[in-house]
Length: 487
Image (cartoon, rainbow, N blue to C red; front, side, top):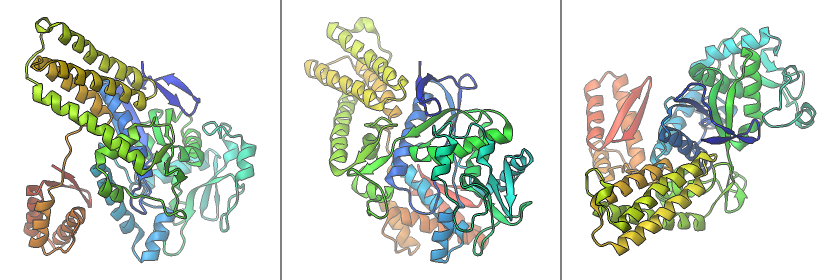
């Protein structure tokens, strides 16, 4: 039986979803003010593996990951560059999703944006005011922490500890230092929306409460994110959600461990923040994924040249065995009666792979232990193939299928979708684009196509779309945005 470590209870618990056979899962997405970095990659690979294992066990998973497209960091960065904040965040949202695609992470079922749910947020805030959990202060709205008796239950802090660390920043109008903003009144050069309290924008925490409950209901099964979000973000989500709706918000809280770079915390001051795009220039996406799954998702991980080289070498062993099995494999149903004694022994090794893999993953998604099971299989496979020049082809096919099935759960040995760079460079010449990077060529073509559609030159826009499709890039128009993926 699958057991997961619940941050709320600080213990492993049997996983029992709200609805049999279905799992509703929400993971806090990125605040899109810059490119995604390897810390983001660590979190989203971890939850990709969790999602994949749930699907492997037969669950139908509905996975929601929000996009915070309005925030102080976005506004400040956009103002510095003289760009509209919503245009700025849309640009980086697209780049971040492209990076996750290139990294080999399965897309979420839904990527709701904060700015598309302002009305729902206003209604939730109104409910909190009506229930006396929130108050208006000169156009701002704050949540009164002391009114919610269970505040601190996720982070295991009491109110006195929280009060001791809380401060009122200049310009804030809250009554108590520990209270947090639900709505912020408009300031010059900021996007704003009308509300009963005047023009303004939502606070960060209310966004996730509204979007998760809208698409998944309450309570839903799994809420995830990095450990840095436990307090105050997830603590505040619980408080405002349960105060507003009077019921449990989430059943299982899962948090991924922090990522260090060469033993040090990532920070601007140390200059050691590595963007996913830069990491992918040096390392294959699958090597990065192997590195991440070599750590338990809750454990801290340390990113270094040596660790990535070790991951690359280990992954090479897996690929070598895959090729060996592919060379020997034959299609058809395996008949155990046809096997000799050595083949029967190997069949038992194949069956133990799945058994040991599931035992590891059922223990709170223990990927290092699951990798041990896979490498035990690799060792036994090499031994078997060395001793058998002409093994049963159907047995090798069965071994390969089982091997790929468990490896794919860990995001490994996937059929990689490679960008046809040669075809894109030819398109760059055709459309007189000077960019040298394949991703930038795609983005520039999408921009040209967008302008063509605005000018109602649909024939030209369709030509660009068709040319990209021939180059192996599929465009998807979703609302005002265009997303792309490798065919």
